Amino acid sequence: MTTTTTTSQLVVDGGSCAAAVIKAGVELSKADLQDALTFASYGWAVQTRYLGATNTQGSRIKAGFADRGSRGSRTVGYQHELDGMQNHLAAAMAFLNGLDNGCTQYKLVAVFSNEKGYLFSFR
Image (cartoon, rainbow, N blue to C red; front, side):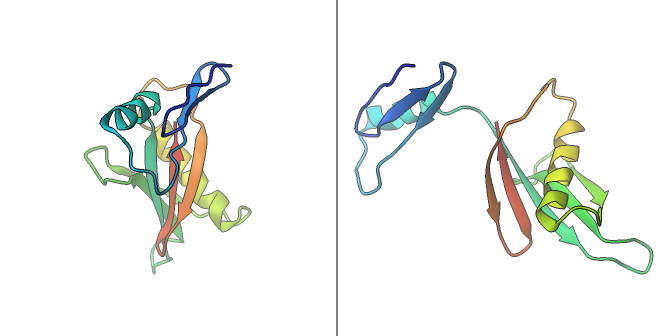
């Protein structure tokens, strides 16, 4: 395990995983900001939202990139054997798995909730 420490406390843990731990209230230099960006890994932010039942369709979860960009979205039926958050995660995974981007695995690193659904952060 290697650890590099600057004002922003950049930490490398476990060989290939890196994280930038940035202290609150500390003004960062240009070098600290660049170090934090260098250690950040690329990830995906998938936003989900609940769509209630209509006269013609049951309840659904819609998932897509948080920026609602050009990759579209995926809508999946609500699975009543799962709880709410599990349904949202299942929809997010269905969306990612449909991208055909060559990824063989995704690591869920954070979950955020809002008034419409969830934001899942993967890397």
